[in-house]
Amino acid sequence: QVQLQESGPGLAKPSETLSLICTVSGYSISSGYYWGWIRQPPGKGLEWIGSINHSGHTYHNPSLKSRVTTSVDTSKNQFSLKVSSVTAADTAVYYCARDRGWYTLDYWGQGILVTV
Amino acid sequence: QSALTQPASVSGSPGQSITFSCTGTSSDVGGYNYVSWYQQHPGKAPKLLIYDVSNRPSGVSNRFSGSKSGNTASLTISGLQAEDEADYYCSSYISSSTVVFGGGTKLTVL
Image (cartoon, rainbow over the protein chains, first blue to last red):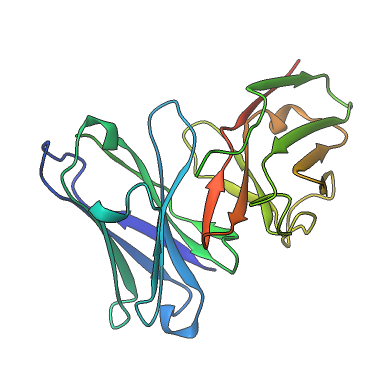
């Protein structure tokens, strides 16, 4: 069974960088697919942040692109997210998910609340 | 990229069928057959219900079905149950190799 788990600080200070890691179990990132980050501000809808594959090829939301960095560590079966210059508007539950293709997100982590 | 348009809320009684709409443009919903639907219960992660407009992942009830006409995709739940009360989100691939979500629809089971 594929499982994803987000980890990282639940608090970030304005203007600093938010950093999160997603650890995958039950499936090797090296085997394929893209791996994505999605966020949800409290009481609001979902926003796609970006996706990365095992070789490090990325796609990012144009509205966030200049502030977002994604990376992958296949040796640890993890991928990560950094969002720079955060403001209160970046306060959200951040989810990681597996993208089985064409942005079909079939497995999700439980989410982690990050407050700026 | 603008969010797809979904009604804020819908309601229905147990046993009824209910349909959610998700309206986009020819650059997203109308241009590709890569529409997905997700169900989200309060405090939980979204769950994939439908992908590629009308395909159900293994384990998803056949009470859930999807379709598309022009720039509008639809999700239908038949035989509404109390446990279906949740938020429902659509998403679509868009021409810039990214994805856009709808604003979500809150389903109330009366």
